[in-house]
Length: 488
Image 1 (tube, rainbow, N blue to C red):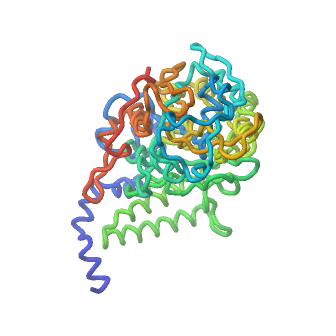
Image 2: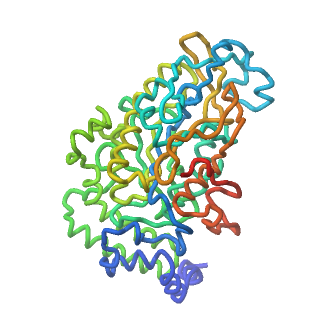
Image 3: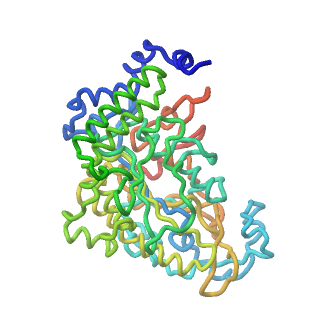
């Protein structure tokens, strides 16, 4: 069949205008024809751009989410899950009755024994309920009244790639939309000049390292590509090709985009591919971001007190501290979902030294972000989440001494915390056994965690769906219960 005939069969002009009246194309092309329709009225949260009719399903506690993701899996045993009885078990074998035949990774399955490695770090009680927190987190320990610590998060995935894909998308297999994409799809944007979903990557000692992070972790899967996360860079243009090339003026770029949008509209008229409409919208967003992104990343107007609160690294682009400050600035500007990644938490060996470094990087900025949001009145409707894809084992991987040890992956229980937007501060939820190996009270599956995130945004997780390949998909798959015990 020749291309012209084939194109005619794909979409008729009648279908084009029918879709234009209800689909994403109407928003994209209407914004070109009449930009005043999308002018910032100062109440973007009450009048979101895009989103689904009927959402939120009920009154929302959160307007936006900031997700601080510790890629590589921080050790709950050395930071949050205090197990003093393990000091008497040093270098003794993990009892078979505790492991109970649960699978382990190939990295330790060949070990002849599984010696217990108690944490070498001191724990002290803090906050209104005397919560135990490691000496590694002195700043975080000061804000326990603001956060809910969940000690019983668990997952089925035991290796990094499926585990991080699982918690980000609700499936261990690639191809599903990420959490931020679901937010953009369901609730739309609160700012026409910035993306609804932004991703920040944090450097460690000037580089990244650690487990690779793939773009599908903030991808839109089978949703329109307009809902995928926009990844900001720490050097050069925050977004590639944001600046005009040499010799191109702003007016010339505007004329070029107008002509390109006209050609894209003509092509959509011929073939009806909805991704063409997404492309139109993305070109327009990129044009507006030429002004909004440089303003966003310019922290010269921040007070000395604010900068000092985030720590010495805050003025170095790409650091975790700098990204936490940017996350607060995005919250002020109506970014719906901001995800801050930091890698190098995969500590199979030399854990004490490595975790000291990592906690030294993240502790103060995490505290500063929550306090900064609180001082500005933003914490009440901003949901902040901290944690990784799974936890780490009580038994040692590799050589064990009194001063040094490593830990393997452990999906059976690990710790995350949440703050703001209707979260009950001062809460410690769930309990693990003496070995931090199994859950004994109030388990929280990652589907439960995602259901709770959606709940705070005013979304019934069972009703935010998208039909694809004959099935209604959702972030929580066919699972998930809201964790009511951490809600105020």
